[in-house]
Amino acid sequence: MIKLCNAGYNACVKEITLTKETFSWCQSALSGSTESVRDISLLKAEASHRSFYRITTEKRSLILMESPPKKERNDLFIAIGAAFFAHQIPVASLIAHEESSGRFLMTDLGAADLESHYGKSSQNAALKAAIDLLPKVATASAEHIAPYTKERMHEELHIFYHWFMVKMLGLSGYQDTFDGICEILVDDIDAQPTCCIHRDYHCRNVLYNQKKLGIVDFQDALRGPLMYDIASLLRDCYYTFEESQVDSWLAYFMSITPALTNASFTTTKQRFDWTAIQRQLKAIGIFARLHLRDGKTTHLRYIAPVLDQLLDQTRRYPELHALPQVLTRCAQAFEFARPQTP
Image: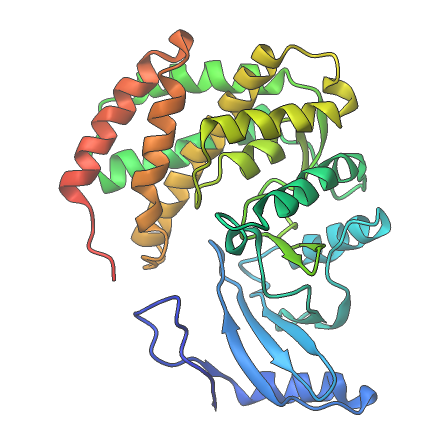
């Protein structure tokens, strides 16, 4: 095993290792460029089974991704990456790939994501660049970019009910109420204009280095609701913006989006919020599932702040009156049963 540096973002991880086979594969992939691996460090991964490493050679910095073929759709990563690259969307270039092991060696888009700019003087420039890219993402097309169906939206919402409410909190008496809420949300979201959406366009998947963007974790892109990516960005699970900032950036997004230039801000804000609600409910369910099924505690800390965001949003809409009642019960139960995290 090749010993690597400590993964500082996770106090439970004291030392990271890379197999000799993977290290040799990297060396072999670089052999034609007269480069060799000089340093390796582990990078933070989101809610997936993949691992990422920054590889430093004599000449440059690269990214190694280990993506288990039996657990991840590597075929979509390659196909959608190629489609995005063809549409001049800033994704990493693939240097080498081994299908059987799920190893990828790619160009490095930089170390600074949007989260590292938030709260700093560079925040507005970084956010503007991320929003300016969305009309280009919207026009991307490929046969591999499937439609985001109502059935899939319902399935994602029920990750919240099954894994968070029932499995984590033991709240099993809300099935009919939650089903009714889901119908209202999904019917409204499905009525939006559709376009290509990244579908995970949050502050850790958008890089901003030396005034240049980089987009990662794009393999789940679908053809779906127009408001989805902007909702993912401005109603982030890892950062909460002031409402005045949300309104200002949403208005800017409307001004550069042809389908929204003549739309009512009030109507657009409601669709934006309801799209964000669907996404945030799904996210909480995934965070709970990571803990209960996969033994990963890294995302438990985000459940309470996302619940707070959801309560603030849902209380604005009388049509969703049952949802804040359910969320209030969830927040109370989570506070009582919250697992200990490092």
